[in-house]
Image (cartoon, rainbow, N blue to C red; front, side, top):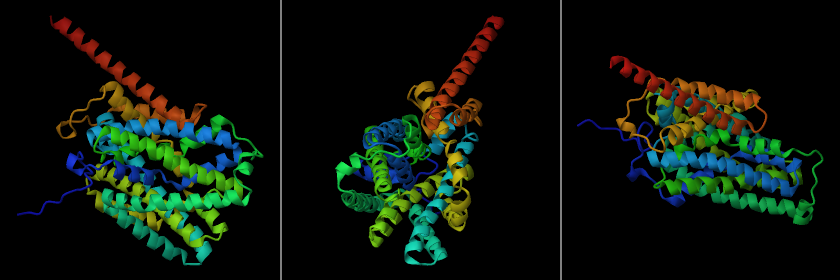
Length: 422
């Protein structure tokens, strides 16, 4: 009897109920997903440019926007049991979904490489360990854990989330104490203020692209309620914590990254632990998502794709870190329109109901989705306001408008044909 491979990550199929996870497991995985070093850097920018009260309100408002966007995607994922890439087939078509998968996958491989370098560079500076050795070892470990998929993500998150939260918070308390306590921090006045619109742009922009990949994780939730609650909670707790670490660190020490603050405080081992675990959870999710994306295009099993992507990201880590961050940021602007089109297709055009994935016969390419994606990307680049929000709103309006218009034209043509036949 031929041995049949069982895909426990359901890369190209619906996640069955037996493969779903409970509330606490999902919460820890989603928290690990939102523990993102770039959010700390954004928090540092906000911390230096806002008063404490403005900072708190901006972070809460920004994470509310992110939470609503990702929470809606989580709802669809839990109800259908499908990843971002498989959901894209409904809106973009079979081959059209390859655009979404390629953009999401390529961006995540790029950030995976950058993440490795973000770990290796400061650790080499402090310890003197060979840079190439650090890059290879961290790349191998992160690729290995992503290979084992959701199970490894959960184990890593159960270890990393409490460690980062506790050690990071202790460092922040120590930093605040060093300037005379909360009274001094609350009295802080920025030398150069940031406008609230610009601050919101930084906050929402920090995770709008990564948030588009929420279904890749949320599809494993046992219930829609669990998926939505854990996703929104993760943004209000996890992402807010990253912003606080970055904001306080920047005001007190001039450094946004909590690990850099800890290096300054002489907490070398805790700093390496926090830095490593923080980047590991982010990179694991990035590599996992890229594996699902390229698996959708190539039909090669996710695990094989993960190994290949991990090797590529590791080899080019330093090059990506030194040359490609600006491009990755630009590419990030191309991702929120994808999520927006998924939302419009599900909630507006299909009124919250999809036929089962395995029963579907998809269009090859759904052109209104591609036009709406291009329009959303243009909205992000050229319309004043909050770019990711512009992209989301613009894509929804264009996609729903064109799709409804095309449907009306088809019905009208069919009606005229019936009348002529009569």
